[in-house]
Length: 327
Image 1 (cartoon, rainbow, N blue to C red):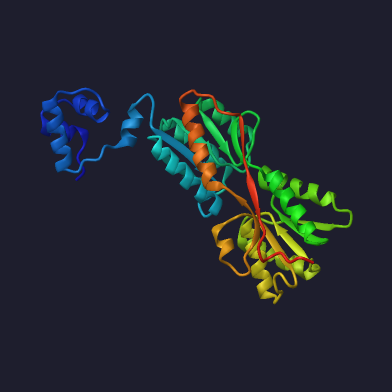
Image 2: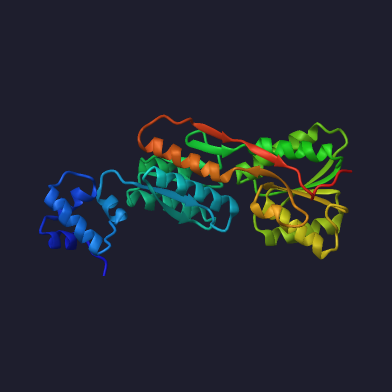
């Protein structure tokens, strides 16, 4: 059975407060220190940081609210957050909401009840309910992946990503294009990414673009792509994410459409797997790991009352690969 602070105190013949003071770096006598250290080593005692934090006025825990865990972007961002927080002597708690907005709101209140020091929020949409919850809890909150005028926000440059992709495919000679986007409830992917793409297309006098909406799920992208190819096969499909692009490639494979010889495909994200599939996927790379590390650094500063920029924008990078042919 795991030992508690009470057990350690009883075996050392000291008060619980003395053991707690020792664990928190406080001053104890040399004799007491040696006794406590010997018992801790003998029983492999590990302090319950979470329980200690609940009793403390200021905790060493950061809550992170994520919409889904089965996402490359989310997992890479979480790895970055965790790595940086550990170095800053914080621990991370994760609340997965499975893209349920009410669960996002509940998670914000739950984290406040657990006395976290701050919250990193990865949300597709910020509603009045989100803002009320954030106001109610009176804790530092950092929004990652989206931007809101009332919140400290760390975003990827989605508008620029869309523009880079649009400009590239036009330069490759593509004029009959399909853009497979997502719901505009997601401002970053659904609106800004598409706006950047449209801006590049407007600079081309003879381009025809058809816009479709699908979901982030590859399985639904497969079905949407099948409908598109049934109507009229374009020279290129630009997908709003790499996952959607891979759904398009799967449909093309089913229908014996060769990529890029008969149709080109491109995406956004820069997932590791896009370098391994055949043909390799043309994409715009997002630096999720670095964004996670920067988010952890920012929330740490906000917790300490230090100044942080209201908006931080991460750069993106176009990666031309085999899946887009030059016409």
